[in-house]
Image (cartoon, rainbow, N blue to C red; front, top):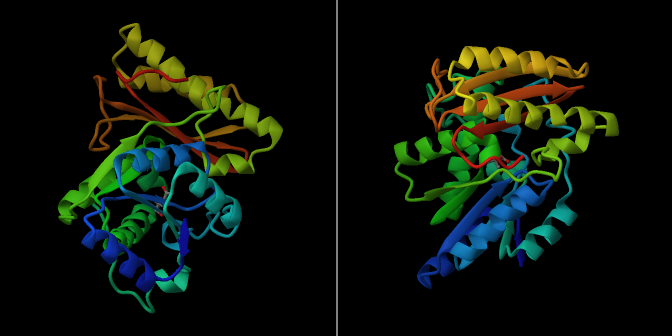
Length: 284
Ligand code: PAF
């Protein structure tokens, strides 16, 4: 496995692979790799001749009061894990390499970013779209793999890819959970033992939401109210949002299969997200 830091080197390797008609699968990450990321790498490995993983903690997608500085940076372990999962190349550019001096161009997306995390984290998806576009332009993959835990991000990247005519297949991958239901996330690293236990309220709330829907409750307002009350039973949990939306990230009144139950909850100081698509297999 090669570790590459410069755009120039990445481009020349990718040119060679393209000349040899090799397919490229791409897994963009911010590092602190866990089983969720590794499942994306393994899927890409199965479906492509070469798999490239990027590791870049993107300053553009963090708000001024967010955790950019303390975001876990574990490059040595990450490269080892990426290799074991089947990555051929890890691309790990510095911020100076990827963000040009005085940039005046950004990629922004309307509407899809107005709700959920987009509403709570202004500028977040502009940062994500800008950096993912840059990475797409450098790597030029055939397929790119995104976890459904960041469900809004997945739909946004899919739309952006289509809108900007990137010739890239965007592949959604299932949420990977711990045995007890907690969705894997690099931010779980911040949790104390007590908070780790409190964090189970997210997956439990999703489970409760699914049960209500399966018992024929289709009014989103009723399910949201019940879930908010349920989450509040954990003292340490502070609700950021509980919403039910369609694929365009618009709130729905009457729930249908395919609609998304999405949660963001602070456990102590750590903001965690989770979701479930109604009608999909329950895995918690
Ligand atoms: O999902 C992430 O880790 C990031 O948002 C991404 C896609 C790597 C862009 O920085």
